[in-house]
Each structure stands twice: as structure tokens, then as C-alpha cells.
Image (tube, rainbow, N blue to C red; front, top):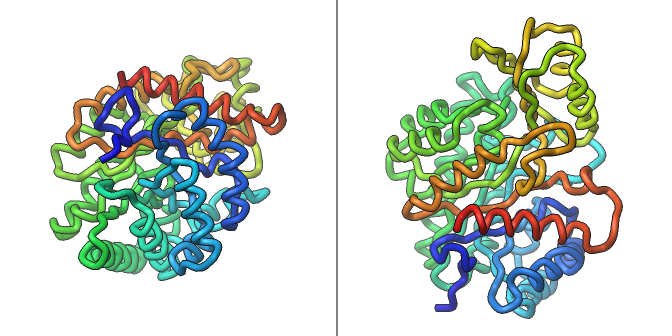
Length: 386
């Protein structure tokens, strides 16, 4: 079998997620892969295959699952350029690069049969594209928007759809011989936010579902919530909850902030209309205030509502190679600690760099600017793993 792993660690599969660039149909996706992914491969993986962490919106997943001319063109593109599949981001259902996504990114949630149907299409397509001997993973939201999915009714519907998804994945392996697993991603202000909540959720499921359902551990999400990634990951391992995928991501942070701190302006500059930027503020006593989006947090900070120095972390994926982001620092140390845990795990999770904010960070620039940024992220991750 051809060695598909990065040279830094032969056991690991490392990629980046193509939600960093738009593509809501197959032709647009191929165009973005040509523009951004191929230059990256030439730079980092010229002499061996490169795994790609694709994001497939629902229309693309359905087209690939159905087959046809466009699907064959897509498959031929990957073969021609020595690219391969092993993981899909199936969290955003529609246009992830619309002018305003915000809470709509959680729709349809796991109470809706449309979410289950989309996930089945992704699994069907991925099973047909996996290289021999490589298992696949699909990352997805953990339920839905917290305010609308915490009642008994939504919980029952969500559980039923997830159990149905697990059954479908089991039947898919019997039918195709390929293993595809679903990785549920905790996130602030979703149904399951924290590692303890994830363990509680899995403890209520039949044990056999853990072969098919596990965790996608997004390091930015858990760092924003002030979790310590190694401790969180170890608690999942101890509870027998599999981590099938890890998204390598960093959040901006500012410690020792008081009202009038100039770093508040740097935080305010991150406020933009497209994505939701859940923000957590921790005071010196360890108390945490939670804000659904950045403007509410900034308003409270400017009023001096925290009453003293605080640390602010916000959900805005910043490049993982940077210890600082302008006037702000980042949670890169948390990511380095998470990777130290990964290299000791057996089997390790799939690793996916997920800086989807590149169009916001560098909306203009030379043609290769995104490839340059992604290359720096890959190089940092490979060095951290090594």
C-alpha cells in the first residue's frame, strides 16, 4: 500500500479543510481546488499523495452520491493530481460563504430529517472515494443551536436521527467494505458544548454506537470555553468515547483586559457580519461570562461589567502558526498541547487544519496568498507533531 501519511508521523493523516474557500457546486469546487489546493500540494506533497479535507455542501454531496458525468470528472481530478479523500466537513449544509451565516450554520440541525439525509449522502459518496485501507470520517454539528434543541422533544428527535445514522454507516460497511464514521463536534451555544456534556450524551447511547459515532474535537471551540485540551481529551479516552477527528484551530485571546484597554479595539475589529463569534470572559476568580456573539461581549467589557482584569477568548479561527494575531495573542499553546496528546494516541484521530476565516483575514492579495498561509500552517503542524 502506498504510504499516505505525512512524513512527520507515519501514523497520522493531516489535511486542511476546503471550507477555507467557497464552492457550492462541483464545478466551483474543482475550480477552487485548482486555484488553491494544487499549488499547496506542489509545495508540500509533490512526491506523494495529499489528503484533502473536503467540505461538501448538500448539493455537492447529493451529486457525488448519485454519480453521473460531474461526479466522474471530480473523481478523475483527484486521481490525476494524486489527491485522496479521508475526511469530509459536513457541518455547514449550505453556502458557508454567504454574506451572513451566523446561527443559520446550525440549520438544519439533527432534529431535522434533512440533516440525516445530507449526512447519508456524504457517507455514500465518501465510501466510494476512499483509498483502499483508509477509513473515512465525517464531522458534523453536535445537535443544533442550544436555545432550540434542549427540550425533551428535540433531544428524542436528535437521538433518533443519530442512531439511524449509526445504523446506516454499519450497513454501508457491510455493503461496500468501507468504514466511514461520524464525528460530532461540540461548540459553544450548541446542544453539547463541553467535554463533560459529550461524555454524558454518549453514556446514554448504546455502547455499540461508538464504533460509528464519536467526537470531532475542535481545539478552538474548547479553548474558547477555557477547557484544557489534554485533560479534556484524556477524559474522553477514559470514558471510552472515541475521538475520530480533531480540527486544528486557534482562537484569539487577550488576558488582563480592563475597560479602556486598547486590545478591546483589536477585538472589536474581529466583529464581522458573516460568522458567529461566541465569546467567553473569565475573571481572576475563574468565573466565566458567556456571550453568543462578540458585540454583546464588547459592550459589557466597555462598560467595565467584569469589575476587574479578565481574559477574553472569542470564536474566530486564526492561523495556527501564529502565537499572536495583531495586538492579541492566540490559543496556540492549547493546540500544541492537544497535538502532544494526539501523537501518543492509538489510533490517532484524523487531523484537519480548519482556518476557514482566510477570506476575512486576507480578502485581497496575490493569487498564491492562501496557499502561502496554508503552507505555513501545515509546516507548523508538522513540526509540532514531529
